[in-house]
Length: 123
Ligand SMILES: [Zn+2]
Image 1 (tube, protein in one colour):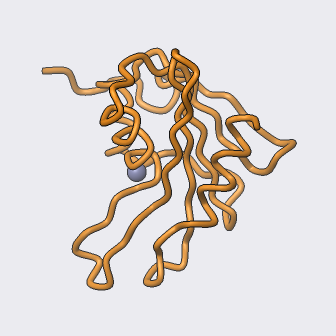
Image 2 (cartoon, rainbow, N blue to C red):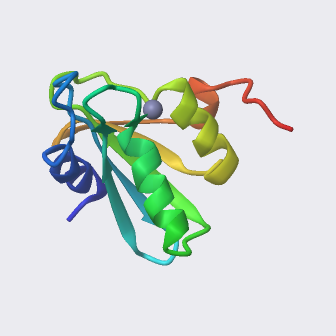
C-alpha cells in the first residue's frame, strides 16, 4: 500500500463529529514502518489534535526517529496543507521529510517543508 493510500484509509477513522472535517495522515519511517493518524476532536473542541501530529507522535512513540515522508489527505478538500502547528512539529522532528498532499489515489503533490514554512522557528 502506498503512503497516500494509508493517509486515505486513516481519514476514514477521523474523530470529528464537531467539525465534520476528516483528515488522515501517514508517516513513512526510514526503517520501513508506516504510522497512520487521523484528526481527533473532543466534543467540546477543547482537545483537538491534527492527523499529521497523531501520525508523527505514533512514529516517535514507537521509536522511529528518522522520518522520510508524511502524507496528508482530507476527503472534503483536495488542496489541504498541514496547519502551522503541524508544520512546526515536522520542522522539529522530520525536517527532511517529503510532504505529500493527497487529493486522491492518483493525484498526489509533493511539496517541501521550506515551501510551506520557509522561516520555521528554531530555539
Ligand atoms: Zn495541524
